[in-house]
Amino acid sequence: MTILNDSQDGSYRLPSRAALEPIDTVKSLKIGIVGAGIGGLIAAVALLKSGHDVEMFEKSRFKSEVGAAICAPPNSSRVLAYYGFDFESARATRAESFIIYDDPSNPDVKKMIPCTDYAHKYGAPWYFFHRVDLHSELRKMATEPTDTQPRIARLHLGTSVSRVDENGTLHFEDGTSAQKDVVIAADGIRNIGLIYPPQFSVDANGNDISDREDFANTVIVKFPKTIQSVCRQAKGVGQWSLFTRTPLERLTRGRVVVIGDAAHPMPPLRAQGAAMAIEDAAALGVLLSNLDSKEEISARLDMFNELRLKRVAATQILSSEHEWKPTRLSEEQRGYFDGKVPQTEDDVYRYSFEHDVIRDALKILQEYRQRNSF
Image (cartoon, rainbow, N blue to C red; front, side):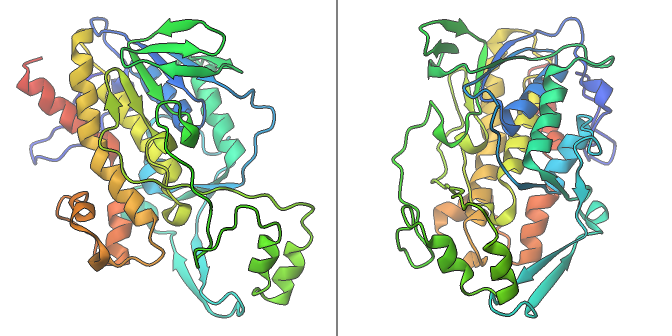
């Protein structure tokens, strides 16, 4: 990848996508990705673009994929656009406004948030997808060759990884193993590398709801009659589990990196869960480019940790608050914002949406290469 993003005024601008193509002298790595969800697939796309050999291992067979709406706010839609994502093919819908109903019993009490100007305001638009459509388009980008991207990832479905060693060795449940230069754990909340005790789901009053079959009816009883009528047409009610955890101390260990929900699960209040996975993937694509030798891997992964650790921790904190009140933050939590704690909702929007992970990754990589005279 050719880095040409500095200018006389000191700002950093993205090079063209073609500039990501590796030059002949660049070291190609063998990358193993555990998990082929949204984060794993976009990581494959980014790392393929940087010239690496990518192999993916997914325990499911993608025969019963579920999911509903998913968002790509500006900070992630700019990443998708940069890598040539086809929004039309993925049937993306560009958001025009959000309506928030503050009183569940009165639909006339509402607040409208326009977002038609997000592309101008934050540098990229906000999109909605059906989750399966987004996943399918990313899978196509990663595994189907094109004239401009003949290199593809090898995807193994129905393949369970039982253990990953810090030296990059993948151990499979069938007793076989594979050695990689870098392993990316993108296998979600049930990540093989992070074990933490489950907690029962609770409602806003702290009551256990994990086994309550009538929970849906308990919720909708406060809704207007017309909405209750629609809800009762459902043939079945599932439970979509939400997870959170305290921020990790590191996102890398040895040759292993954790990204997405495997590293930083968060509630959907800010629509940043998938967005953070996409940012993680793009950062890896940039920071693992232009390697002169495998001896650089450790330093590159340290840069990833430096770039992403506070960003994802701060976003976890933002995503856990229904109403943002910065005065309630602990000193440790405030530290994740590097002295720039958002004070208002507009500040939160700017913190979330203006972030350009590719630009920032290019900047830190360029500074590293200048220090080391590459």
